[in-house]
Length: 305
Image 1: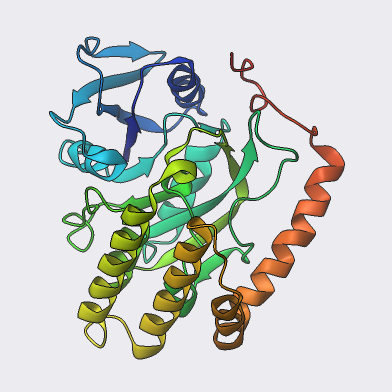
Image 2: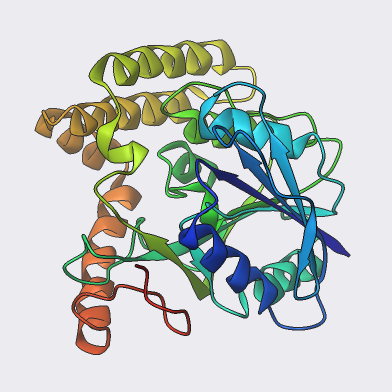
């Protein structure tokens, strides 16, 4: 079985080199069809090459479409049996692909896998989990609706008739959440894998930190439109409500005006979400006891400049 890896980037820099290095050092036995790097800004791209045993394709969007549009450009070229996402400033541990592909092989009903990340970087005070803590195994549909998946780097899916046509909404701030909800709407089965983590780099210049408020509000409205269109035609009324409340909560947080009302409402209608937040904090306490206070690089990789 072959794997395609999708990496959007804004710069061919040292962070991308670390991401590629983490792909090249994956455990043997997994056939990587190609790593597809899509750049939004670079005027001249390098020729396709190999890093270790991994063939890399460098593509250009033609115009700046954001990370969602870059991922779509790569998805149009992906031919592997499984698609994995890896942002250009994140890194994987060596057993990332082996463990995820093992889940797919042992569970043919599973369409998508979510893996939690651990934050690192110069703007991080402590290593911590980036998404809610869930038990290993199939994620209930109503839990997927409130998005326990987080960023795309920990996400992968099996290419099939069910999933092949799904794409990101190019310029939307919540494009990844809409992507997951569309897969849910189409009946995809999600799995949480806890035997491995990925490393999520935090930095002040990330898009998640500097997104303009008008774009956040526009994206929020678009997500609500998509949810309304899917309600009762793939999403249940409960799933649609959970997704809507979570989007309102996330949007308010990104606009730096946290909505405690939405947080309390989500906790009331989704006890599993509330429990996952508690377990996440418990897990973070355990992580702090063993992880460095301010890790500037993921284990096994050189420190970033």
